[in-house]
Image (cartoon, rainbow, N blue to C red):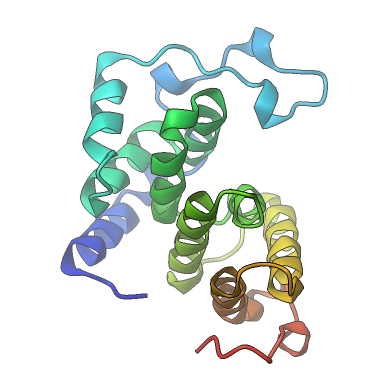
Length: 198
């Protein structure tokens, strides 16, 4: 995956403000507590209405500009990106792209789920974000993120082995797994080698 100057600047800027990103969210993206379902699933969560600032940032990021996507991630937080995507399908693709600028891998399970889903464009956006996250400098893994990392890698491994899936998806999954292997979530020997994913 090529790294254009704008993407590099956005990643550097995201690293500089990583402490403000994470699982937090802006007040406008905070969930309505009464909307949480019994299973606590994201599909049951309904974000509060957007304020003007957040609405404007979603619009600015809609064209996929790396710096605008990074600003969106910093504004609403990584978890809120997923919640907005569930609440409004029109925001889904933007949210998937913006996840590339998260400071951790806490949203890897969702991205991996989308990567194995029916929509090719969404799957590619998710896999590209996974690749960017996997390529980022390794940080100490928050114990709370260990489960998400393992779940995400398990889903990616299943996708990489699914011969009925499009070859491009499998190749992108394998590339990400090779970068994630040193984090202990998958054994290199378990990653399929029959595809040229280099």
